[in-house]
Length: 536
RNA sequence: GGGGGCAUAGCUCAGUGGUUAGAGCGCGGAACUCAUAAUUCCUUGGUCCCUGGUUCGAAUCCAGGUGCCCCUACCA
Image 1 (cartoon, helix red, strand yellow):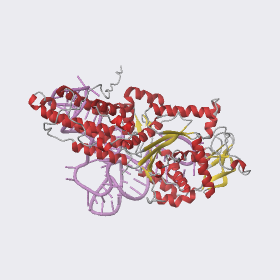
Image 2: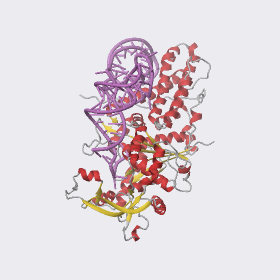
Image 3: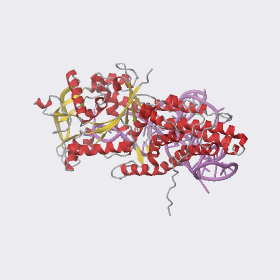
Image 4: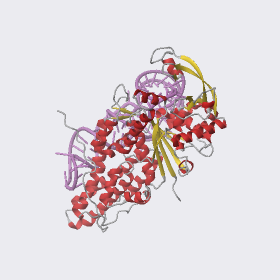
């Protein structure tokens, strides 16, 4: 029986942005989920990318004296390079300006037009002539119906646009979300619970049809089929949000990849600000297309910076420069650990605080995992020449139950999309090892050669628990755990590579995988303890 | 304006009606020395935001209030 396939996505990032901690966070969570799934032997597809068809992209490119294409290429390149540098294991990187996406979106829109779920209507709103853009009613009111740019009055303008018949799907969305029912054989979970309640409330308020086109941008965006020939509309392009949402499907809507949509567990990760598009419009679009729904949407909260909201005016974004500095000072795994264990997967925002980063790094990685491996490997070298001794003595305790518990808890945490909890469960096994060492004091026993059989048994228990913890923690701390494997002479990394990236989580986390006689090399500290520079 | 969320130890959070409210980190003390001045143990620490209500019983449910936050249609 093969394990269910897994397809995990991040939002595609706005190509005018510079990568910051928010992008890195969502992508890291997706990466951990993807790595865990592959480790568990599940065929996995992990997608991220860039969203490029906004009008502002055309404008920014012009401001910078570049063609839209060159500007988008440059910025998308920065995202791709950033994720590559951060070791993200994404299987693809979609850019909405790529033909493979545009071709699919054209087809989806054609289908919607044919079924009547997309139709021509009048769009009416407050128009800022100077900016050539509409403002939402609420915003227009906030600006007292004057342009925020030049102060000229906004005008009430009406134009022909294509609309998506969102209102039609209200009953099905409520069945899916409020009552948890399956629609067309699939259910759709919005997490966390608070976010689901939020969206249910909003859907109950009533759904209006949404515009899904804009009057055309020259040479940018995706044309609405037939609009150019329609004198009523003139050339129109697919509204950028609709265009963007389709990426999740367009990338896997190919002969070889279709299985990742039709026959896979599909998880969309996003931040809470774009809940509406993902929890209401996206499933409605899929229902309209007759496509299967994703299994779950998880909308996490935000990072704030040192207690303050991140904003351009405060200039306190955790940007690429800061991210690079953390990677340099604490290693990539150190950054991943902080993001995953301290990040805003709940409904509250999390604080990216330097002091907290250092505290957690020292307590959990340096003093915890790193030191534990260090003491176990050191005693093995010191008392047994670096080889796990034959099992001839009694340790006087057993770590197998703690290991089983950790394995179970990690699985539960991942199933709940709480990789941070999973990381803590893995670390708890390390704590159990530290406690066992303290309780039995092998370093004292070793002073009398008669005790060596017991010391050997103790070290076996400890090394075996560390081995299992390293497998459980690998999705979060790939570099450090692979170092542990290398020093224990384990070929898990090679096995995964040979197995198409798929691991053997069950086998590798079963007690007894460490054989007597195997070498353990102590090596350099896995995580150097961070001592803050002295302030005079 | 409308909708939603959050408020529990110094910090970050668990805890959705039932014994003296928990964890991690930090702080203080002790033990220990294999280890990265690491580890382990003990201690400290809370009118569970306020007021009122429902209940035999409320951190938990309800109402009102206060504070902070998010969404309200192109910033993870």
